[in-house]
Amino acid sequence: MWEALQYEFMRNALAAGILVSVVCGVIGTLVVVNRIVFISGGIAHAAYGGIGLAFYAGIPPTLGAALFSMAVAMIMGAVSFRNRHRADTIIGVLWAVGMAVGIILIDLTPGYRVDLMSYLFGSILAVPLGDLWFMLPMDLLICLTVFAFYKEFIAMSFDEEFAFVVGIPVKILYFTLLGMIALAVVMIIRVVGLILVIALLTIPPYIAEKYTHTLGKMMVLSSFLGIAFTVVGLWLSYQYDLTSGATIILVAGTAFFLSAFSDRIKKGTSGAKD
Image 1 (tube, rainbow, N blue to C red):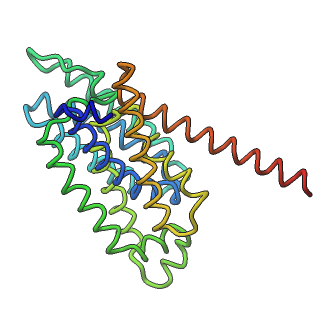
Image 2 (cartoon, one colour):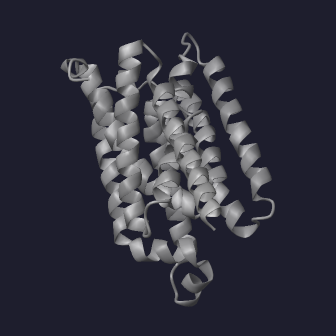
């Protein structure tokens, strides 16, 4: 790995992976404990509509994805907050329509054909220095927001009715969380792509939840796990000439199954003792 770091693109890739891992640890924890993985997936895939709109309008793809993701997140939030029984259907429709709009707009963009694979499966090795300067303030904004309203997020995540009773603005917090998910998704797309966003958002928190007892510790451990998966995935992709985003997710997936397998062994052992 040290040999690979002599190249600027590998240093940029490692920095991008660390920044994304931190935001995934923080936001992914809130996604898991609030059980809004499906909404997060809808936001992530609908973001492709923003990418298509950006190429068609001639604006930066990151800006287009951020604005479109934010708009879709607010729509999904309104739907899920008012009518949770039907929210999954509408989210599924927005998920599909967002991707379809992106593909059609790219088809209609004259004289240019974007590489779909780089957005669907990520292109961490092609992250320029400019994107890192975009990711850093996004990381700080998300982390500072969660830190500032940490107690309120705990109340909303674990006892929503209590949060309402004591006067916590649950609706505003919920929409704030969805907005932060939209910003996080734009960052993650550069690393692992639209298709694999959910894995990086959910696998580290899922594993961390088993070894922690507070939301803060879960966020910290999730971030470190994400960094570990990213570093190992980058090293394997460099050593064996593999697609980096997919390799990172396979490393995370392997850790997920090992964690689940160890749980079964522990349960089997404790059952045998009883």
